[in-house]
Image (cartoon, rainbow, N blue to C red; front, side, top):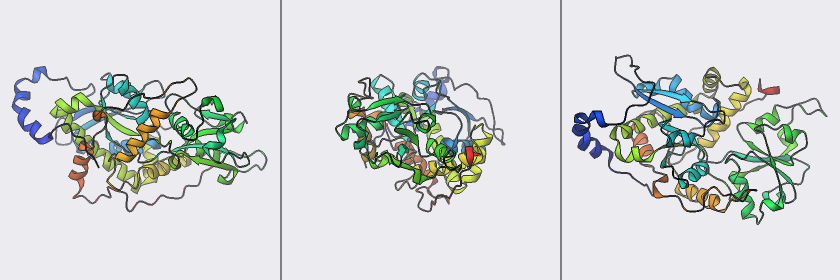
Length: 385
């Protein structure tokens, strides 16, 4: 596996320590929100983490790292910044409003092509969680069956797997009717969409929490046909941690903070894998608007996208990266747009920082690959309550 690097971290720290001390007035100001200290009175380094959505199990590892004190143990005071769609994570990072951001790879590749200088430092989701869901009697069993059908798409950069998979089948947007879909399953349940976009950890659960008016009982998986994009050539990498490329290359303090941040995040996701109920409770306390059974489902399904990670949590698989790039180059949506038109630069990803964090934790009693991970069984209730 190729491992792009940005320089030797230890040498950079030693070589620049005196210079930084003598010229501290010229260094970048620390991010806002600092001033806290740990139990020993040591100053904590303030860090701003930009999420791509509201608090929910999709981000359980970050909230667990905060709740369990893993960030503080690393000398960090982390502000987790939510977004309800009003903040584009990679834009916040590129503009200096965040120090790290969580975002899907094809979305950020588009921003990089547009001039953002960002690096994927940890590929937390190892596999795609995107589905296209139809009724079991709809005769939509594969992407090839989309032709002539009403296909739901959220847009906002979430649609690229759909169009990459369609391109591989020789279909384009002129062969289907693209229906702009809200982030729920209402239009599908009302019959306005033949195949709706859904995430394993969210919208699919919304279906299984809904009552079938014909039976008075909750819908079951047998009521639906589910196409997983992970099983298609359109599969793309999703939740990754992004950092500022220039700061990674030139700022030893940012390099050190990056590795410390990743160590805490790893511990947070290991905690979520080992303690899904507790992780769900933590996210609920952090402000999730979902019900408890929905939130537990979400944590459990999110864990399935992360674990197992054979090379270690967060390590970027080059084959999956290349597949994502190829899909992004081939995808064309209903407006004729593509996420990217050229190959991204080598600086778009690096395993250097996550590997340092994994190496630092290798002597601890942590399952860093998910070898022992076993998902739990979650019983959904009406409305996810």
